[in-house]
Image (cartoon, rainbow over all chains, first blue to last red; front, top):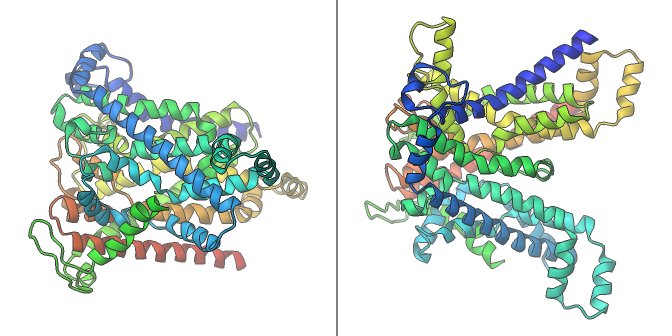
Length: 270
Length: 286
């Protein structure tokens, strides 16, 4: 039994190590001068961190950060508001075609997002959204998963009596939504915004097609362009990579509880 | 609802229309051609079938490993409620939330022929004489892609399976334990059958996700020394979405054909998801 326990622990330690080691090596490689990377594995921190930092920040990396932060932030906000409103309507109001509408949302959840890609780009061309951050933000206004998620949560957590008594006191429908419904479903709102922030931050295919001006780049685009930026300076590339992944890792560790509950609730997203 | 119409429904329907035309931005054509694009998918466009076969290969290698590993970890962890469990969950889940592009980049570096960690390690151990050209050889490259998928998604599989384990009532275990069931017996006769719905859910999401592979693979082969070749060496690792991207927005600008690829992919995903559901359901009644 003790031997079994030990094997189990050992197995878990190996798994954890395999998960984390690549991150560690990536971070370490960013602190060495490039020529050393040819000769040895970077197990430990090197002394070229400042040099590499200068190279990376010389290339408007801050700008890229700001772009991604702005896009993901606005996307998450927009998505949460639209999803909460739609979810609230689907959960609490009775109207014609309500069930049909909900079934339609469920159906679109299963459609892969790449399906509409070509048409979306044509649409953007006509709306003059190519090379614009709005093109990357607006797609998050219609996330079927968000609507589904908010509807389920509102249905389970929001007592109808609360709404009725608020209405009795003369609370208007808009105020009702902002001041009672939204605060009441805060946990769902936090989870959804974190997820959307994550998906928007990681999004690559759409920005790759829509954005081609370097000053509008998002983090994934910048990472994929790193190679062209500092041709053979591998160390600087690794540092850029580390910096690009860092915000999300921090965000994830801080909000792990919310992320995990979101995924466990059946987040179906490619 | 307006948002929904403009960014949700319209693209799907319009893509279908485009898939029936020979719309090409550079060549300036845009005529109705009926189902010709769909016919071409299976005749002139060998790359489409190839990309599907590639993704099937990646899935065949990676899905059993991800499920198996996930089950094994979840099973060893599920009675642990302390810090170890939380730490491991977070650690294995990190790759899943990391920017896919960054993962592709990381693997490109680690498996690089000259400066890759993998080769340095193998050389040091004396297992190989020269650095292996991981990303230059079609079969090695396919292996690297599969490995990358496994590394990225095992945490996801673990987290979902943990939720599954948590839903199994404790009394069932205790009863089985009383009846003398051992560690492995408990696993195979009690846990596995109870987890069937969760495993089904995972398999289906992994199939859907697997067919949509693009970011990691593309950046992987953009890597260091390799000049960007669409699909990697001998196009061994081209995926359906990559092919779609390349057809519409990179090498050619054939919107019509690309739209047909998108719908073809959608149908294939739907069929495979249904098959997976059927397979698991049949196992249940047997």
